Length: 418
Figure 1: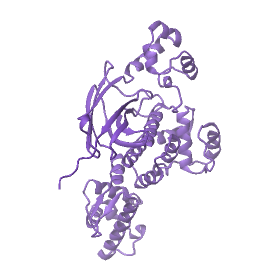
Figure 2 (figure 1 turned 120 degrees about the vertical axis):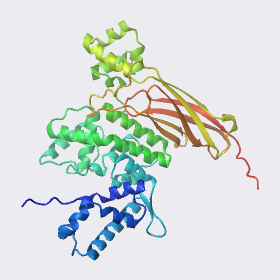
Figure 3 (figure 1 turned 135 degrees about the vertical axis):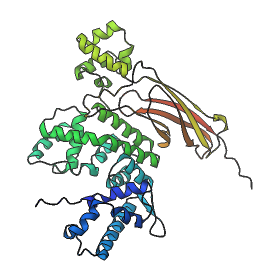
Figure 4 (figure 1 turned 60 degrees about the vertical axis):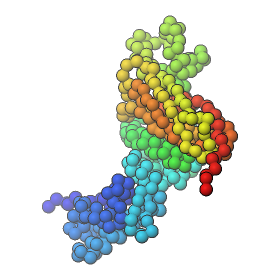
């Protein structure tokens, strides 16, 4: 007699219920109970009640068990600010955090952690620490004897954390992510685990950007966007940009830097002979490098504030942005030799006030050839001239971000007629 397969839905029920509330499949507690009756979990309850901590199999037992389960799940989701329970105590609706968790398919405990840990002063180190504390890494395997290897890794990565426990999977994720950014060669199981961390990392970073934008924090959101580029390209924010190109070593990047060639655009603007002389690569490698240079995003951006001379305090304002890619040929996947899966480039377009660290508007943009985007924001409440900045940030290539400063002249708010 084979061992029956049991359901583990109750271990992951929070995320399922939360996602169903977001899509409005579940709008009250009774619908959540009904939802459970259509699951394999419900089928197994009566056949193996002891496994699910049930004392009997009557309708009463099952009904009480499911009601208690739903009550606990809804209560946890409410505490984590993923959903709201209406005053009648039965109707439920999704909140912003719940929508972010469902959209990026991440655990409700992770979104709760992001919401409580991120703040308006979070920098790149904080983003990496909070990112690797996500519940998604709870199950990262900790093998016998790995502690020694992790201690050695900790001695060679830039971000140290004195209070670390080397038996904690989150510490392991923290170290493996840094090893990736430092391009340290790893072997065997650690290399496999590192791929697992990297596969999860990008959507977690994108969810972080959404959490920070919801709070209106500009600089932390920009830091998280930089981390997205760092993860895809396996670079630190201080690494030379040229390391994104194939066959460019640390030594070659340093040599280019000394010659005043620091970005991919600098390299592309050189005369052919001078570039060949500087790089001194065989023809085949030079061709591979040139192919990636030609795909490196070169985007022209124009923008205008609609009715800029009629903006009053607290008014809705629209910024129209026109984007056009200068590159020839197809827009293919990003060249990312160290990232374990194919990555299509995407962008964030945002308006913020760097002086007050306020993020006023943000949009995610997928750019093929051309795009026209409208950014809606609310004018500041105080009249006068406000120095704002429009940022155009890539999530995959480093060094091609753009920023434009502009002044928004805000007039007095119009008096409402009685």
